[in-house]
Length: 109
Image (cartoon, rainbow, N blue to C red; front, side, top):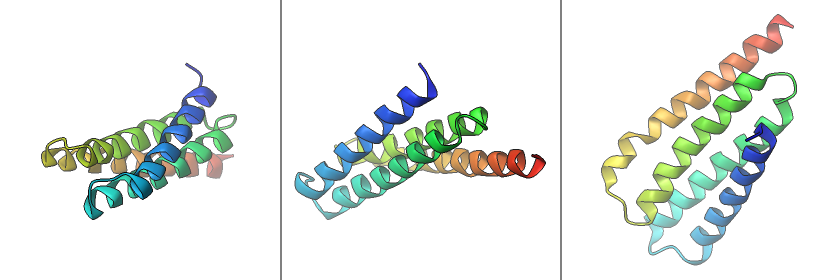
């Protein structure tokens, strides 16, 4: 699957999660998890699209990190065990690595 397809599907999922959080979540905590996951996933899908032509590796890292981050939050919002919250920072760490990797590539020229 191409980075562009993965990013576009990721953005669509993020919008759906945000909409569900606003209109169908069971409670306030669940709505917040959906909102946070959707925001991070959408921002990083757009970022991956923006850099995929010049920084392929970091673009993939951003998409994978956003997916891990958001999916764990979405799962908890849908009733999955709360221990999944311990996995969420793995996604956040991948996002940080992706941004630092992109910065390094752009700095290097």
